[in-house]
Length: 467
Ligand SMILES: Nc1ncnc2c1ncn2[C@@H]1O[C@H](COP(=O)(O)OP(=O)(O)OP(=O)(O)O)[C@@H](O)[C@H]1O
Image (cartoon, rainbow, N blue to C red; front, side, top):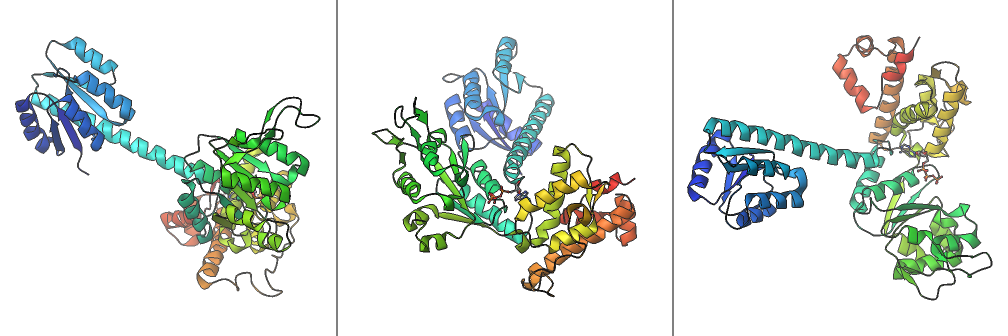
């Protein structure tokens, strides 16, 4: 991409001369401004890679231009100053204000080109750094949610699409599917990410306490209210509140939450006047709320207020392609947490994992893996270590393979994933984690094997621990 240079100088001849010589020599596009005021306006409108400004100008001086650029854009824009020969104190002043370099007039042309090339290089590196930093931040947001299946890709797309606005989100999914992680990802990608994220596990708080926990109370509101206390909504002000397992809350609290959603205000117990709060609400449930509405346990109007932006997390058995990836992720995470050397999952255990129904989803898998890490005597965790019978569970029907009720593409992808985890796992076991040897045994080029391993989230690391 062509780089973009802005030259600010009050001498028109100098501008013409520099533009004419620098454009072909640096291979960049040069714009010119004949005053500090005009220059600043152009900088606000265009993303320049480099600004070359004269220090001494009538009106806004070069130093003032520099100060303004630093105030508006920080380190994003690289600035080089020009000063007349002998005005070294001005150049020092410019460096103090954050100029990258200074050049004295009259110039030695070659030296000028060389210094501007260096400044362009600095600007390119800086922009690349900023881009990577930004990319890292946005992948960080999802880093705890592992899974590459089409189902999880849809979840990530939805999170990205809905995170930035302030609308209410309802996350549904069986227990242990990652609703809590998803709520945190929505907050992390939202504009509120530097503000509080308050999670409330609704069923664990007794009904009579939940109201005062959420909305707070005034001194004297009830017998033990010896002082004013802020509720969680006030704690979450300008941030996000996550109401986990909302399906379990009592109708009286549903009515009060409905009011918060409608009016954006809360009323602490014992307080006469409502208090305005600016809180984004994310709720989750593992129960079909439609049934609760039918039985009269959940207010229908409250449900519609909550279900503005829905996210559904599919159960693990419907995204079996993710199982090897999540299993290895949890293994690494918990070996580190439990301060144990990295173990590996035997191919038989991975097979059993893929065929399992996982009623408790990722949480159930996490528990099994922790047991395996603690109880397996060797580096390899086998089905026996976690109490799984050797034969994989039969899946949906008595004799039916677990993929027969899936669409072709998905069934194929899931089976490929299992096949790769088992086959490559076996070859890596034999080669003690040596990828070159494993590739030879597979009859593949090393790079081809590495590509497959990357695609299916297989790491050679755990196999290197073999005695
Ligand atoms: N996609 C995933 N990748 C990695 N870890 C996950 C994933 N989904 C869930 N987990 C892990 O599984 C455990 C359960 O996840 P989480 O608490 O988010 O589920 P939940 O749906 O909120 O569960 P519950 O309904 O029981 O509250 C957590 O330790 C979480 O880190």
